[in-house]
Amino acid sequence: MAKLQEQAVKLIYEICDRYRDEKTPLMMILSDIQNEYGYIPLEVQEIVSRQTGISVAEIYGVVTFYSFFSLTPKGKYVIGCCLGTACYVKGAQQVIDKFSEILGIKPGETTEDGLFTLDALRCIGACGIAPAVSISGTVYPKVSVADVQNIVNEYRAKEA
Ligand code: FES
Image (cartoon, rainbow, N blue to C red; front, side, top):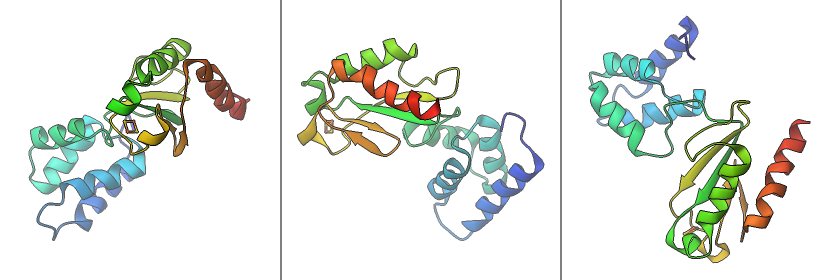
C-alpha cells in the first residue's frame, strides 16, 4: 500500500461509509482497514480523517495506542511474546531476547524477508502456561530459551 492504488482508496471510502451512521465509528473503521490490509499507514489515516472529519491527530493516537493496529506492514508470522507479570517472572524477557537475537530484530520490527514480526504483548490470558508465546493464532506454552530456535525453524521449514 506504499503507493495507494485507486482500488485501495475506493475500499477505504467504502469502509468509512459503512459506519456513517455510527456515533463513534473510528474503532470499527480502523479495525476493518487493519483486517483488510494488515496495517494503517499515515496516508490512509489522512483519507479516514477527510472522510469522517476526525482529526489525523486523534486517529494517529488510536492507531499507536492499541497494539492490534499497526503503522507498518507486519510479517507473515507475528511472534507475540507475553511480557505480563506471570510470564515475566518465569523468564519471558530472556525468551523475547532470544527471538530478537535469532531473528536480528527488536520487538516491534519485522525481518527483511517479511517473514517474522516480533511483538511484546501484555497478558494474553494464558498465565497458567507461562511464559506464553502466540504465533499467528497458535499459543506455545511454557516456552524456554532453549525452545526458541526450534520454534523459528518450524516456521522457516514451512517456507522451504
Ligand atoms: S502474563 Fe502472560 S499470559 Fe498472562
